[in-house]
Image 1: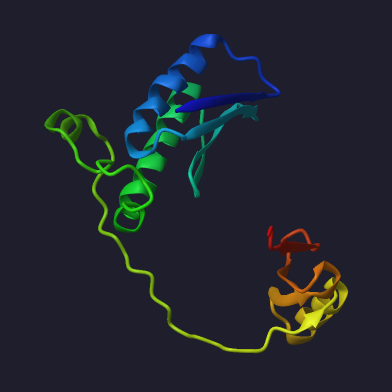
Image 2 (image 1 turned 90 degrees about the horizontal axis):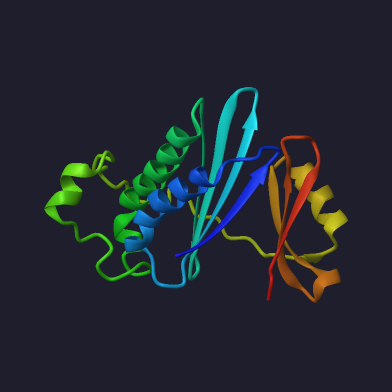
Amino acid sequence: MKFVFTDKKVNLPNKVHAYAEKKVGKLDRYFKADAEASIVFSVEKDRNNVELTVRSGGTIIRVAESTSDMFATIDAAVASVERQLRKNKARLEKRLRQDAFVRSVEEEISSFVPEVEEDEFRIVRTKKFPIKPMTVEEAVLQMNLVDHTFFAFKDVDNDGAFSVVYRRNDGGYGLIEDAE
């Protein structure tokens, strides 16, 4: 696993990075060889924050934790990733390493993350509607007219690519575009 460390508004000793590499490195057994872990450290109002993002192939897992101790925050972030992996175990087994969820007796004893029963994704309603070509401004207007928080459309300014506009919590608008 490749590691990328970022310290925001804080200078951390190398032992913190070494500790994070050791702890996050234990997640390596879940991911293929091309996995990359990005760890962002920051301190705000006497709280130590860690944002951990693991990318492996097309799978991205992101967690953010905050405690009063940086080492405890790292532990909490690793535990959160493990919890997400276990919760979605059945869905992720095809995307992760083949033996990712095979555990030894030592690991069973040392793991602090309890097994979580997996919930199924339940589609409770399906809607079909034509996705019309329009500009971003027209899509925002249409979204506001139907009083929704998002609106899907084909962007005429982007060669008819599938796009989504959405209302942000700060009152602004966001745009999601197809990268292809």
